[in-house]
Amino acid sequence: MIDFHFETDFELEDTSKYSDWVTRIITAHKRKHSQIDYIFCDDEYLLDINQKYLDHDTYTDIITFDYTEDKVIGGDIFISVDRLKENASKFKVAFKDELLRVMSHGVLHLLGYKDKSEDDSDVMRKKENECINMFHVEQ
Image 1: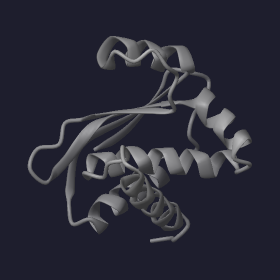
Image 2: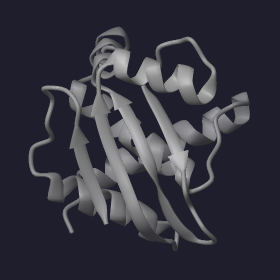
Image 3: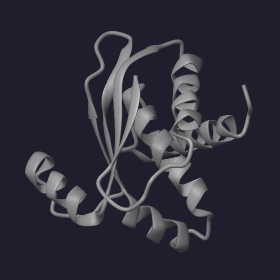
Image 4: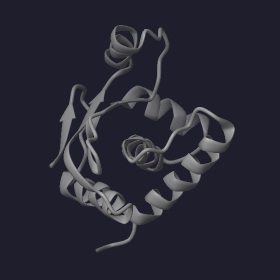
């Protein structure tokens, strides 16, 4: 099951469309999923998680906790709506496109993609773009 939680004023419209999209991403990678929770929050909420659990004292747009077992994907994906808005403005993209990029980024981490090296980041960006394109394809 894919669930969405909102710890801020932001809410997704038509969560079933996003749930179906994430499921299609996972299925395209020949995987199944258990529980995946997207938690939308503000900067301070995510900073607190970053400090408590990762010992990082920085703002970030996303933190993914991976509970994948074997080939069954599961996890918690925390997303700062404040960072989404700022990054959309900074990179001159629509908020919805930045939302899709970050949401796909989290599930790609659960699928095993990394982004620490430049090569890994390049692969991650390519996969994010593929995922964003999948969102616009009706099933």
